[in-house]
Length: 627
Image 1: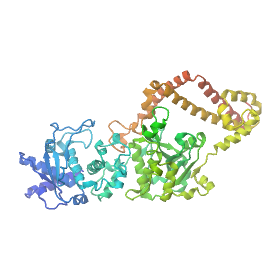
Image 2: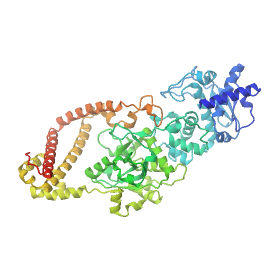
Image 3: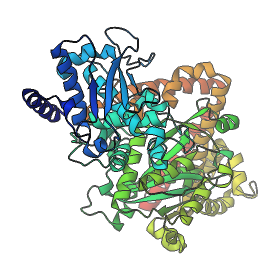
Image 4: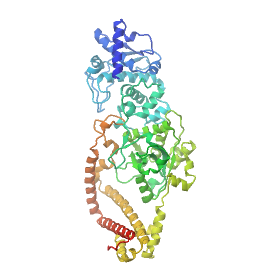
């Protein structure tokens, strides 16, 4: 932009020396904006205003200039407000800077209180700690903003379906989600037309816009046919994100991702999981691999999962709140391995994935969208209308940019995970053939059946030689058996166990499941405690339910995807201190409310330690060990 400004000044001085002003030039495609000279100004002040108009014309790309049907007269008028003019970065009050007068699409009115700042020039005007950086650039932005409104007369651009989608509006002109905390200007959420004008002013004036809002940038330069050499960019995209619970960033680079897949967790037994769960699976290749290809499917420790979930802040999911949007919707980035543990061993639910049919550009579009979502997403969770499936549908929809893509919202406008699978199949956007052969799907990593229940049943049948007929079924054993009872059994059967590795392995499998169920029970007890004693948990709600990715940002971070310099590396240490304090507080409350819990947990840990030692000794043919 500095280069453009220097060229603008040189051309302006040349025109002045020839006895011409920029506004006198005949070509509309060169100078759509023309100054309506205010009364009472000295000649050098008029020249400064004409240079301001010249700068605005120079910023406009060729196709954008040609889109104006007539020359636009720019007039400075009284719009009220303070002198000197003040822009409120906290957005508690608004100042009108410009408007298109009603019924006059060849005029733009600007606030006359901007004139003193314009006269100071681009380098001399007062600075602002937000927005466009100083008042001269803010005045330029206001002029460009209103110019976009003229181009968008009657919603010519802002009512188009693809524009509405990429900027977060539904087809009826309502916001899908508000992202005001990561916005350059919350005024963009007033309506789609204002959103278009705000995004265009930043595209034209902010060299970092391409990196901060890549999805919107791609759409707008295609829509307005802006050539790359006209919108010089000086930014390096920040491609890092953070996996939940990890302190080191990971890179989301489409060139290192073999496939993007639709991942479906099959329905569970609880109400919140009754419909299943929709996610995106990113088949990220091991950094050590030289080439990206099918072999990356085996690099499961590097595969990432994008999951949208309700962020319940009252420790227990309320059916009514989930139906009425009282919970925030939050994006989580997870490891596939941890997801398989949760679904396969605790919830005992199958997972299956379907590759999306994407070319390289479409894959890049999805990754750009997800990276932008990671840093900016802020939604409300509605169980029926804005849930995991609708957000995953939007991510898939982002792949296709300007292609008209009919993805219905399911029966009665309700989108479910299985319903989304059917919709994607009908639209031929996923490869369902990978699930045709069950064994091959398991081998290739497209199907993750929960074999754990079968393992548990086999282990239980072996353990029944010790328990006799006390427990008739596996579920009864897992529900009613106590850690103390199992401890006493291990003590009484010590000699028998030390000679039978199969029986010891079976008891270890069952004890590990008891450990998982105990952890889940502790979570439910914490929920009950949070319900009964909300005052005790109130100081920690910001830790439990804060949007995690936003906490990585420094306070002065700008909008959209951040830059490397805007990441706060000390955040995780401060969060760790808060969590340690929270854990100690909860631990103390749990001990008071449920005194037997600690004993149960300690005995389970002792049982596991003993069984693992016995199994190790059996495998190494060492001497027996006592309990």
